[in-house]
Image 1 (cartoon, one colour):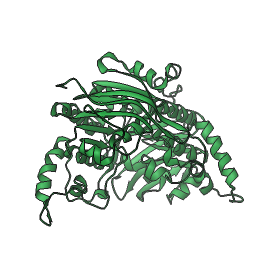
Image 2 (tube, one colour):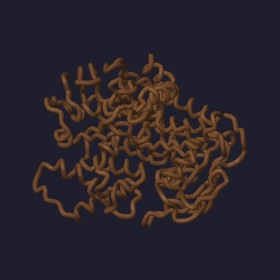
Image 3 (tube, one colour):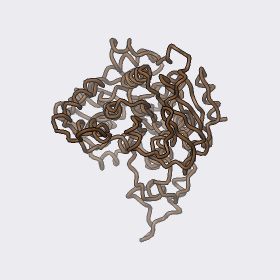
Image 4 (tube, one colour):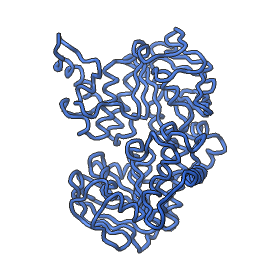
Length: 501
């Protein structure tokens, strides 16, 4: 990347923001140098999202100063951010699901000729951008018909079309497979040469080291350090993110010590198909095992867990839970059978964002109640929530707070906590670390290993190949809706080859 000028596009001093009793930003001092890829990392709740929202006009700071291209501003509005050339791609998509792709690429700024929308001109502008990120999609397609990964790329293309001077990317690869992620990172590396400074926020440290010129670490709303990537290593960054004491406890996730598979199967799947991607999948999960599912977006891997849980309709095939065939798959039956699904899209499928932490933590246990009285009191719900908050280390001021006000990592802990409350026999983990910081990810994996060691079964899909190879006892590879092979003790390169060949 070429640094054509050595001055800061943005400088903030003593920037602070408080939400109730939570200090989101605490006298933050930070400079973003022009024509660089500048990565910011930190645990969920470190203040990254608040900082991004302040820069893009979504949130006003309580105090501090913001300087953009040498000019000082007390705060940034959404309209001013656009005028200054600040574009942002949020992790949570902000697209119109009922409208077509082209309309989503030009929201509220369609090119017009008189009273008519100049669709041809818009398409001529959009097509090269879509090609640059490797997305082949019909511009007339309705957005809701596309995969989450395609939608995420469309969100990115929408921002790039605006030709921002500062592009803020929030977990831009969270829904992308390995090939799509590589193309996106290649594009990000090129943007500074075209006059765009990139502010890159990600929990995936491999990506950060691959793409960033500068890495800044935030903790508890303040800057820990900001240094050139060439002067840093992974261990130093992790220590900065979580602190020296905690970093010593974060190590490589290990497979179970006893390599021999238990003879008793919790889950047996034979020739499973649904009405969409899944054609012929067979697999087994034994007691005490963590079994991985690997496959590209659209291969069927991303629909398998929802189909097993009953959220997507089974077409044919047999599903056996602890020796008993299940003729009817539904979410209600799965809860009663003590099967838990931790969904990939926690905000849309895993949580009631407008309800309290207590309501969310109690939802599954109360819904799955089958014996005795189902009457519950507010006090019992709050007590249950308090116990789970302490167990999983959820950072929240009180149980009555809206779950939507929590950081992404703490929201994920709530999703996991509510499902583990039913003491599941089988846990279906669907890309559970999406948008989760390295500290929370390590805690999650240790918890899941403990669950397996207690005699439960775990079926785990991840878009991060390194998670599968380091964490799973066995891995099934899914291609074109078919389980093509079962492997163990493979490295990342070998698994990537199997998925893509």
